[in-house]
Image (cartoon, rainbow over all chains, first blue to last red; front, side, top):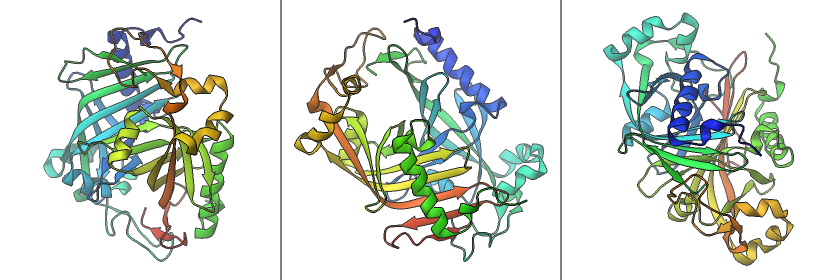
Length: 188
Length: 188
C-alpha cells in the first residue's frame, strides 16, 4: 500500500509539513491546529489541560502565540512553572503533533496594539470581575466586562516537536531547537 | 436564542450527559470521547500530552480505562507521578470536559483476561523490542512483535470533572468525588 502522505517520508518534508499545518491553524478556523490542547502543571504538581485558540505561528523564530484572560488558572500555573506542551491531533492527516515549549507572558504596553486590533465581540473573553473558575450560585450568575488590563498574550518558544504519523507504516520523529530542527526518527 | 443543549442547564442533567458522552466513546469509534488527550508530568516537571483510546467507562465507580505499552514514556511518568488530566473537546456538543484523576497501572495476571480478548491485529501496539521513542537511523527501522508482557491497563480513578459548555450563554461546572458529584457552577 502506498503512503497517502508522502510528506511523512523524509525529515525535511515532515518538518515543513508540520509548520504548514500550524500556520493554517492561524488563518483557517476549521483547521485542526486552530484549537490545540495546552497542557501545563499546577502548583500541586497536577497536569492540567484545556483547549486554546492559535493566534500566531512564526516558523523562523519557532514561536506560537495565544491570547488569554490574565485571571485564568493557566496564567497562574505558567507564572509558577513556565513550561507547556501543546497537542494537535489532525485526523485527516493521521498526524499527532506535540510541542514542548517555554512560555513568556506578555501584558500591558506589550500587548496594547494587539488589543486595539481585537474586534469588540472578542474582547468579552478578557474581563474584569470574578475570575474564571470562581464558584457561583447559578450557572449564569456572572457578567463579562471587557477590560484591556485582563488581556494577555502567551508566547511559546518551541523547544521540541514530536510528530507521529499513523499510516500503512507508522512514523515518528522529534525535531529540537538545540539540533536546529534537523530531526531524528524514533520508534513509534 | 434558546439553548440548543438543554442538558447544560442543570447540574444533574449536565452530569448525566457527561457520562453518556464518555460511555459513547467506549462503544463508538467516531465519538469525540473515543480519543481524548491524556496529560501527565515527566520527571523534569514538564507537562506531557498524547492521544489515547478510551476502552472502558464505569459511572458507578467513576473510573475510566485505557490500554498502553508498558515501555511507553507515559508509564514511566505515571510511575513517578500517578496523576493525570484527561481532555475531551466535543465539537457538536460545544462541550469541553476535563477530568482530574489518580492513575493505577495494572499488569501481568491482572490484565491477562483483557489480553486474551484483544484481536490479533490490536496486539502489535504492545511489543517487545526497542521502546517507543528510541532513536532509529531510518523511519521504518523497527519491528513490533506482540508481547503480552508489554500489555498494561491504566485505570483512572476520577477525582474531579470540569465541564465547559459554549452556548448562547457559556456555562461551567465542576463535579468532585469528595462532593459525591453534586456539582458546583463556576464562572466560565
